[in-house]
Image (cartoon, rainbow, N blue to C red; front, side, top):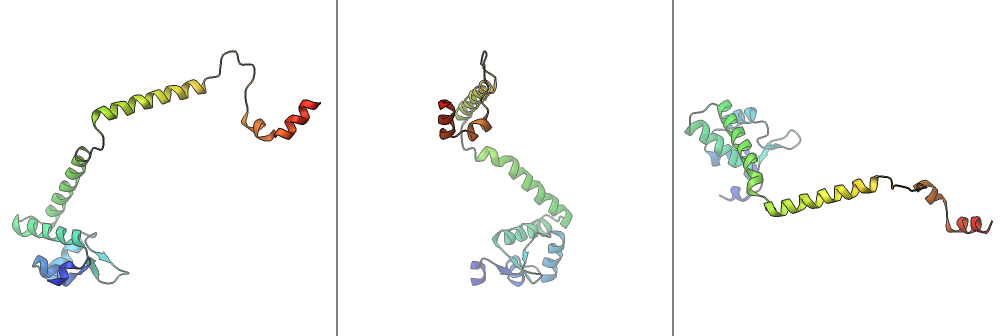
Length: 145
């Protein structure tokens, strides 16, 4: 079947792959609005993920005897379970590296706190606006006076 190789399939192709009638697919589209993509209100096109989802819905409805609401709940539960498991599966750094990064962060926060404190015994405060307005030429004229 050459239609399976295309990135976007029409509803008739999806019906043939899933072995369901077109009215069944339209009913599923009403229950799962994000199923397929409509181009400017025209016919829907389906990608690989949509076809896999249609096949999963078919399995839940016909194989396990669930209603469409039950199938939707089951798919949502599976999605939330995958989200909860995902960070543990794809950890980029190990616990030792995470601990080192925390200590570096704490050190940087301590340095920032030291920089924010006014220095004891300082007789002046440096103001950025005064420095920006003073040019080397102005400073030289002031020193000659």
